[in-house]
Image 1 (tube, helix red, strand yellow):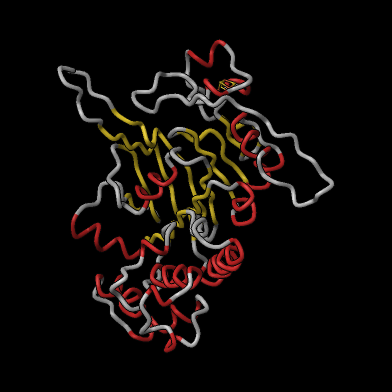
Image 2 (tube, protein in one colour):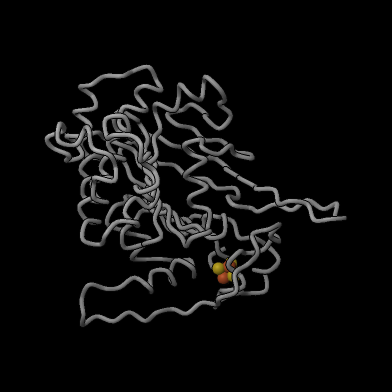
Length: 318
Ligand code: SF4
């Protein structure tokens, strides 16, 4: 069953007008992005910083208003919800942020942090708070309830953030690089916790990461983003084993192999990145691509199905 269906999602940020200029300039942060996530599955949104993945994440939980496009969560289009309707729907979608040091209010004790979404929805319930702390491994809950965030380790803070997201029983969770600010030694614990929680609650998750190795470990499907566009998407194993887009291939070539005897040749790509301000109708990867053809600078390639459930936007496969 489909839980999330994103259609032609676009977010443009207007730039301040230059003096004496009548032209309007926009940053195309998210440009005509479409994907679906099945119930209980994790989709990885992968790309370098500045590719638009965090903006996409914020659009999906409606921390930002889309410029255009549709966001269906369980068949309800939330793209245009406002005011009370949006507040009511927020119960269903929660976000886990990248930085647990910034996302937790330092003046709140753990109880107040986890209680916040329940109070906002008029659903305060002490038992739910205890249960949420227990399922994220903060046991016994009494030991943590009255601590401030500065009295917790980085891993414990992220567990509190996960408890806050889950306490309200969401049907869809967006996790924005949830382990990238954590010590390497505790990252695996938090990733495994998220996998266990997905299984326990049959959660649907959008997992944002810059790391294809983490995406492979966590996700059922992967979408690779470059300068506001999805350039490749499909089943996670298929994308990792059989990448098609030159950008995905380059990203993968930079992932270390755990076997010290095995070697992978790193693919070098150009450093000059296309401008995201009023970008021309051509492949956004054009400047950096080693395989560019004449058509690539005249026409943006459509996302087409190159193999079963594997989509790529590149003129090499058109
Ligand atoms: Fe390279 Fe052309 Fe494919 Fe873009 S469309 S990735 S420039 S080959």
